[in-house]
Length: 409
Image (cartoon, rainbow, N blue to C red; front, side, top):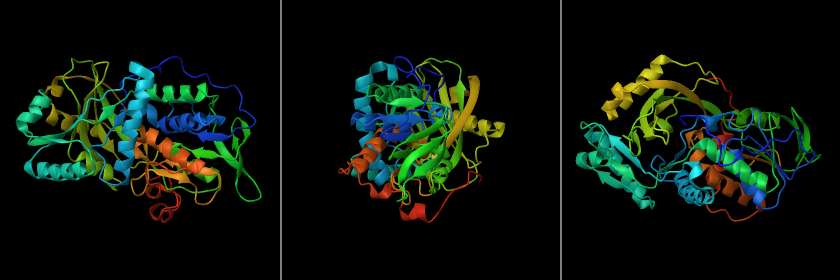
């Protein structure tokens, strides 16, 4: 998650005062996924209108760490999407320059004991078979990569392809691209319902700012995607999964990579409603160190629990003992959009023609946004997508079996 609010490269795209009467596409949600989708669709000459209930960066993307990771993806559809997205992120960063704070700094995954190290080695072998770059680290290699790390760790693995970006800057840059192609950003404007044709297809969106006629709507509302889907006549089992993070005082550059415990991957894939924590530590351009992470299903409750923060801190100190002497200056969190099978939901709605979804990425929305936008645009245009779309289809069995989701745990 970002350590401080930051403007985008250039000025914030100006918001329209009024809703346009018509648009070729309406994107609901001005976070990283919605912004990337808007930019991609506008490239093809479509007039795109982005609406958001609270405005750009009013939700999950403003509370993200900016992870662009392959190391935490299990081999399969999501890893394929992540590898494609990594390439698109490098292209995007080349277009926008250093203002994005994009860093291809790599990630280090660490094991506390031999059992964790063996499991990490097995996963690394599976990653190599899927064309992911990874290097095993013994204790000496681990300390060479991260000199300040605890000498008690059994070893780890280095993933040079892992990257990080300042998420708020990235969202602004995507919205700026969409606006440069004629897109409109209207906020605050919440989606309240759908205008439908006799066939049942989307013909417009009823919003808190008025009605806009369109035949194409993209639900990119993140943790609020289930609510939006219901308002538009469909259902989507996306639940908010809460996360917390600590931010330290500015420090010298003592953490060189994104560093996290080997059990972080299991925490991401867990279906448990109760709290899970796994240490994730990384430095930022400002010098602050971000310390996470936690996961639990608690609806949209944003109450700060000091016990959770204490557990996050304890686990981080087990990786970097110097953190015991460092002050945490603030803590905050957000809500990740979680799907039942831990895969994003990307593609046409199974019930409402003209409605598409781009959600359910949980904590991987920043990293997967460019490839999500590319895949969705290909499906809309009837083109062959660069990754297989079926595992992400809104109508897949894992989604259809769940039905609508309540935000309550």
